[in-house]
Image (cartoon, rainbow, N blue to C red):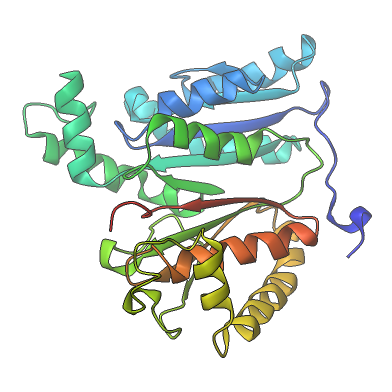
Length: 297
């Protein structure tokens, strides 16, 4: 595929790009917004959706070509206007993306209790009641989001790094890929677009000399990639991605997360994720490799 085939028009002051930052309260919207601001985006927090078009026009008149807005249930009934606002943006040919951050219930409860602040939809009920109401209200937006980031196991620096990978490059970077290793024993990554299982490969855990090492070590990498089927599996992953890549671009999906799992996330998935990241970079793809469960075993 040529560079001309994968490039999209760059944002300009006359045609700005908009990223809507949304998601669950306590999941890291503010951290994501700060990361966007550090990347040079013009960021507005807690914007009523009906004001988004006015902000875009204001940005055009002042030469602002990258706008990020935090929109969430704090605006209550106004939040329901978001779908019609998106339709208006599309009608005016304004490019926009939705970044959705979430976390599991336990993490949100811990974070909210630490901050001693109630959830917007909690009312007189428990924190879990507010979380359930918010998840229900946010479900349609999550389903249509361009990028979902699960912050359950991320610290603020890791979240900022994922945001920077997604939105810190040139506007002509048509597709950005995160390759994530994980352990099935810790649960599936809810923010993955595609999940692959490498538990068909022999586990280095049962090789005494390799057990204390990780998939980042040369010895484990060579052992995993040297197993029957490992190279063929990598070839098929790259082939599959090459088939899907043009479709993602045509559908304006510019953020893709590929997850590779083994039992614990220490050996096989880590080595295979690093190798897939290397191969995709050779194709000119902007790739970030992260290891969700490394160190948790």
